Length: 289
Length: 215
Image (tube, rainbow over all chains, first blue to last red):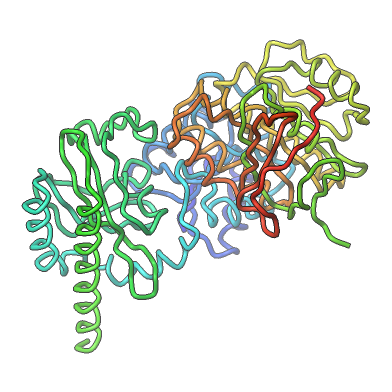
């Protein structure tokens, strides 16, 4: 778990770093908005940001706003002595952050991290009930998703022909991102979990159909979907033999459309085929390792 | 003795600590009355009300009129209206408006912390209403806000009520909001009185039952 602590006070910063380090977390420090922003850009997504509100070159809320772009799922807290009167939230009404007065001390920060970051209570999307077990079930597949590409890619080809759609893909959804094993008709890189439709599809072990994506309030203003020209979406979950949905078999089209009950059944069958093949490959790999 | 939250004058089961509920119904159909009565704390409990429509003054007046015992030690109001915030019977934390979810969130955190510092361990939270917040923010931002509040309520063994008017929102918005909560109370206007039913609350049937309102 990666935690960034931003505070101009060396004493406060060190106390928090040591408390979090003793609790087993990986911590980086920054003393200014600029330094903390650089760390967010270069270190990759962080799980947690703890920041003083008053930074020498800006405010903690400016930093949280930056973190919401680079680490959208991060649990963020203002750890500060600043009063409400001194914290101008009006221009940052959409960042959402916890408030930890410094009197809570480093132990209060550890308590916040252990709950908010570990339980991921600041995500902008709901988590499946079995999220932790789901992530553990995904691990062996996520290590080298390319290894499954050939067999899965054939299924995406069949899917586009079968349903007369522009695109099909098989994606794996980890704690923070979706990465794709195979794409046909569209090319997707890694997508933040809060930006991908599959995040919502995972909540239900059934086929998900969104006939008109642009009319769905969950994806209002979603630039990635607009850019990829996604008007229609359907998916079936990839459910492991232990019952955890680790990803989805997805269909896309630029135009909204309907999707029959029979099509749902066929899509579900394709998803079952995909995960069955992946599990067989995974088992074979384990036996020859 | 059970730690469950109890509602003796309402046809509701006892509710386990840490539960957040979506309370769904038309704005003037008894839903606010129901939630307000659920929020009123017995001795030794605290209440936090996030109010987006009624000022703190009006909220306190309603409480007093209902015979509830209110005071700044047990009632905190996060006031997103243009009210003066000058109320003796509650600790009022004013926010510039319902679009400032960050401001609401940090004041909610502070109210919770203040109760904890005064050894008040049971806190009832009401967001009156989530519909207003949703009308000023996009669904993702409102989702993060609800998730954060419900997380704290779950961790500290409180109870949370998030009011929503299904008539104001797309079904997918209601479904998404529901997924951050542990259960749902649905309210409707019956033939003679308001009625409610519950979903997702253990040991309770999902039949419609009447309750008297003071609206």
